[in-house]
Length: 236
Image 1: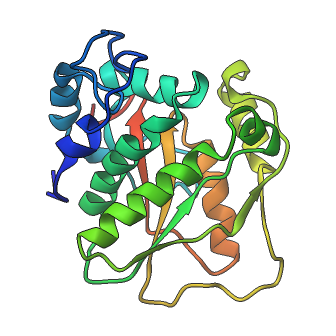
Image 2: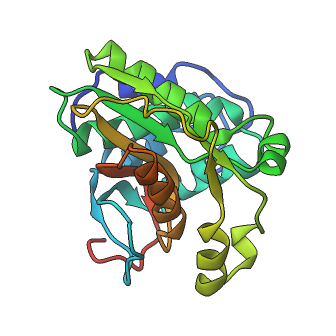
């Protein structure tokens, strides 16, 4: 994994009384949301290419930190669904590791998080992926990367993907996103690497839909960086 420095400190520098987000263990050993054992599990993960089978059209190359399992899965659930907002910092640090493995640091990097719908953002007290993107960008900048976060996408109302099958996800994703400013010139130059960010890739239809909107606006994504991939994958 590319060394961005001090991952352990991001995972262990704040004692939290709620217990480990990865395994539920309680005690003084659980810091910044994860116990030492889960920290070791997370640090052992290595970003790798992943691809849904079958892959939807317009899906860019994808890189994931690891499978949607174990401490990574439980940490994401705790962050998104159980109100553990303090996990944004360590999870954002892990997402930075994925970006670092996926792109060339010699070129400017634009991170584009897939946005939450308005109801999801309200339920989570803010856009959960936007928070991760901010922490990932800050970590990369501290390591000397020329990186910025762009937010050109707006999420339109759609059904909760948890309740949909693969066909339903594809249909919902087709009309899921719009540009915030129609007709605006692309905010990136030709030498910029555009990275779409998401937390989990399952069928890939959400990333593909976001990528189509970005492509039409002159911001074709070079790669997608995600924390976890569900395990029906070519490489896991």
